[in-house]
Amino acid sequence: MPTTTRVIGIDPGLTRCGVGVVDVRADRSAQLVYVGVVRSAPEQPIATRLALIAAGIREVLEAHSPDVLAVERVFSQQNRHSVMGTAQASGIALLLAAEAGIPAATHTPSEVKAAVTGYGAADKRQVQAMVQRVLRLDAPPTPADAADALALALCHAWRRPAGARETGGALTPAQKAWADAERLARR
Amino acid sequence: MPTTTRVIGIDPGLTRCGVGVVDVRADRSAQLVYVGVVRSAPEQPIATRLALIAAGIREVLEAHSPDVLAVERVFSQQNRHSVMGTAQASGIALLLAAEAGIPAATHTPSEVKAAVTGYGAADKRQVQAMVQRVLRLDAPPTPADAADALALALCHAWRRPAGARETGGALTPAQKAWADAERLARR
Image (cartoon, rainbow over all chains, first blue to last red):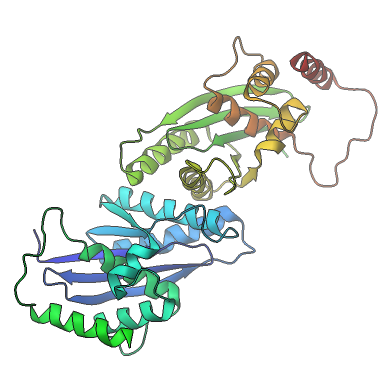
């Protein structure tokens, strides 16, 4: 198993699709590789919009060769107006993962928020602040879609492998830094 | 403008995705070119399922070079259980149209039913019966997804071009055949 996993996170959307790539080490420390937002204009035909989103994601996949793709899981209960476009963009992301030959996973917004802030109902600012701290960025990633994409990638990398439970003991330096950052972010 | 338009219709779905291709002449007469169903198994990962659907649609696009793609418009109010997968599959179809360089359109289920049966709330059997008659098939296309894909393609081809209203006068032989078929199907 490699000590570093490169994860691409996708916050799916038609108007703004967040794309973030992070390298995450076994000790949970993480480094920013890429972050950006792919955009398409609402007045364009839906097929054109999806093709723009696909081209943007493909470019990042080719440039950064992630090991795995994580995309937000979309529910029909969410924001009615845009949910179909969000679902379509998420389908595109999953297809591109399969076509790139890398595994793909979906995570719910509350899983992502809980993973990065410790609180499943955290707001956008808390997520942005935590992503900034964890990745040691000079400023919170903006727009929120970019931060959400990075949060998705971190959430995925930090899942505990099946059967691998923490067995207690002292925190590693990275775990301690993380715990500190979490505390700061909750102030 | 060509006298014949080749339309691919897609009834989006993960477990069964209907794909139909028809040639439709300016007089509304139509001929079957291809019909089939792309399947993926529910136990497969979602990314694999979407890739199978994409590969199946791409194969038909390459084999039959349609002029335009029509796909069912998905609403979040529809069948909750599978609506997200349906939306994702529809997004894949729209993406493939853009990538093949052909226009794409969406039609609601009631538009499709109204176009082929004259009744927006027609049931599956009526749609299958009308598609069979219009395309002069020996049996109704099955499964229903295949018939729906053909109905979508017919619906799209039969839209009146903007500004082109029927100006009255006698029915062409094809229009008469169509009107007869409609009457028969409603019995």
